[in-house]
Length: 396
Ligand SMILES: Nc1ncnc2c1ncn2[C@@H]1O[C@H](COP(=O)(O)OP(=O)(O)O)[C@@H](O)[C@H]1O
Ligand SMILES: [Mg+2]
Image 1 (cartoon, rainbow, N blue to C red):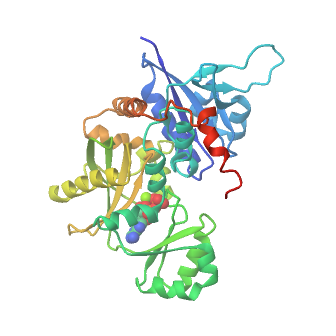
Image 2: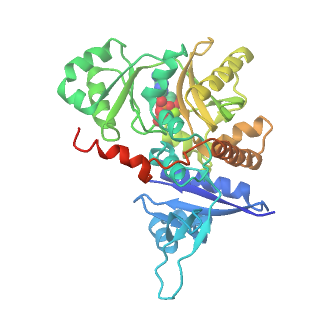
Image 3: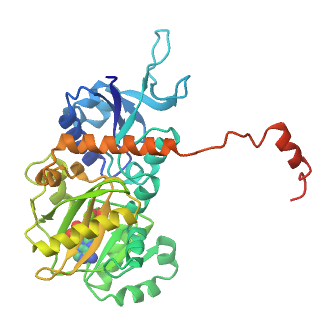
């Protein structure tokens, strides 16, 4: 059987760069020794430069991000003479010969945040006709935008908490009006950058003074902010969805536990078992909530996944008022930390099987797409057709 070359893409110019390195390496460890696949790393440095090469397959090499760049080989996507997508190494060498090209069959996107998760990388893959795991351009872009995803959910009667959103210019020009609108929510409120993750820039404000400070801090990270009513007391429940627009499965629910009022970057990634990414955070699996609530959240997760045009895998996070069955959709992560493997393990699907399923889904989706008509054989610009246009010159 011909081996498939799987590009494991990670890193990126994102505040969650290191978390992505961990997720990718968890995947590499789980996928090792699969006969039908060959794994090729694509590491995007914080600077945005693309690298490949063996040193990237060893997690300990990432202790010094400068050194890893020096040890790895710059690369880029390209097309070979047959029009197939390849990873082209840009090794500068005095040796004669062509730079190395590796044909690619599918990309496993292991980015978190920014242009690796927001549809930009997915768009590059689409332009190169390289199947990519997870959601496509639209699902990824919507998933990254806390306002758009909630607006769509609200329109479909999915419960979300009340909030006010504004851009930096709007705040600068009419701060008093925005404060007035925000104060209709009542303090405390929670301030969030719209496009970030991992709780970066998220702050609770109990007063106008704290709100102004929180907004100023959050604008350092994003040009669009969302201020929400604070759900308190609160428990958080997450659920993962796996599948395509046609058929989805939901995982068991988890209840992540934070040391503080809101789950921080520290809680999520740097608790006791450092280096294990999202999988190391404290959590109760399956979540210790009534079965009926768990069922409602799982059903709601599947509905949102389809509604937001997602595919492959996602983790959906909900806010729940403890002791009640009241829950709100909070966010969707289209490339969940550690691929949410710990949730699927509890649902009877091993990490390796989960990744293989994700890769197969991407390949299947690409096959389906290729079967559809994507262009017309007739060339509208052929001499005959163009003749008719000539008369239009200068008519604009
Ligand atoms: N409306 C809210 N009320 C109470 N706590 C919230 C609310 N929104 C978010 N949080 C807390 O803040 C954390 C981070 O917010 P979230 O919207 O998930 O952003 P991020 O994308 O950075 O994870 C959540 O995990 C939760 O602990
Ligand atoms: Mg979150």
